[in-house]
Length: 231
Image (cartoon, rainbow, N blue to C red; front, side, top):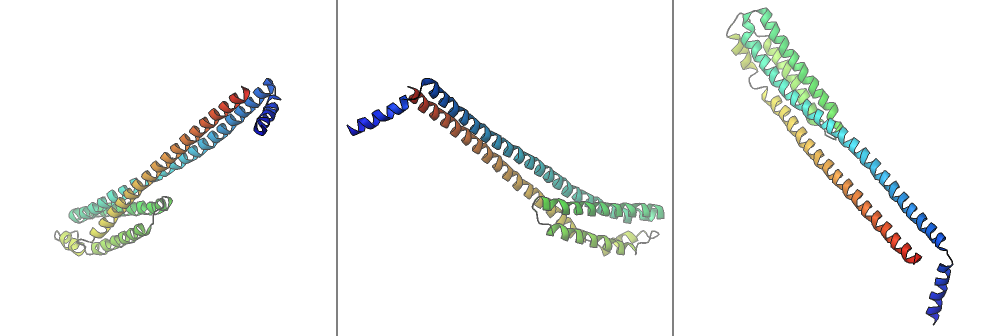
């Protein structure tokens, strides 16, 4: 009997509200739910926009870093070829010798410039620059060794090319290996970053989907409760 009295008293309190008041409460709850969902949606959209902006910026830096590393690799190979051209064709005269020597030095400068550019790009990708610094130093030493050997070159002696080349034979192997390693390391790091960005996108999608499911479930539950109250 006590329980019946409690429920009777509760129903009297609920029945105290008119239909209009109940509809107003229902509308207010639904509007509040819509507002909360909308605010959450705006927040998620802003976060997604910022993440996409960061991803695009990171992808740009990754692409630039890869292109720079590969370009340094190519320019160094051209530099070595220009060294060979200097030795093989330098005997055609001083003008030809100076032409190919200048080309050799120009390629050396291009390779150095690209390696220094990598020195700036890699920290932006969270990469350690020790390897690049070592490569820059070794490459600079290589240039000096080539120039020292070139002092013994005689443009009037056809055998001079072989003699001078023998003094520096094989010294380009280590710089070649180090530049190749820089390229491979850059590519590996780029792959790792791409995997991280893919995981971030997936996490963002799952969070958005979960938020929408919770919002829909909350609105549906609110509608059921309010409908039951109205009845």
